[in-house]
Length: 171
Image (tube, rainbow, N blue to C red; front, top):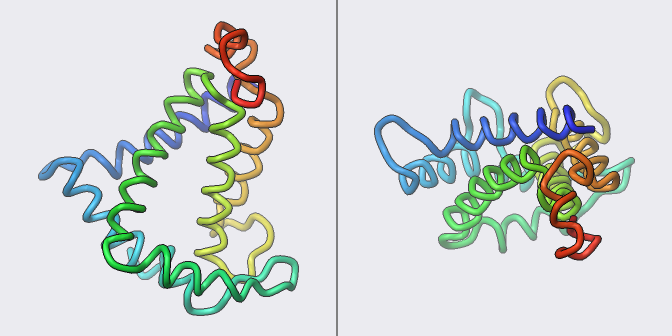
């Protein structure tokens, strides 16, 4: 579990580093670029989060989630929400990566990270209930939920040192 936790943390931290650290600008510019290209637009002809989720409603095992496109259109895409939510996603990815690599708050961060990956999967693919080569979010979701259920930082992580100070559902 240590190697799986560390590897997934490294992948998430590397992804956040790639998105947050740009050669020509700072973090603010990186958040604007992420919100305008990946969060709302198209990158390399692949439809991304909000626009893909609004077109057809996603279905899970044949059940259409008709409320999801309205949620994306009103809450996640209105006003300055793409910049606020996009920045939150980038910062959370970095925190999730660091948390998993250090093994601190693995239950809480694994659960929240799994829910984030599930939201990404719903927004990107309307009819893909399982992992495919085009949808690694489902695989990451399952790994993060497994890390949360097994409290992967309880032996070789900071959760072992903090378990007496933090509630059990966090560490």
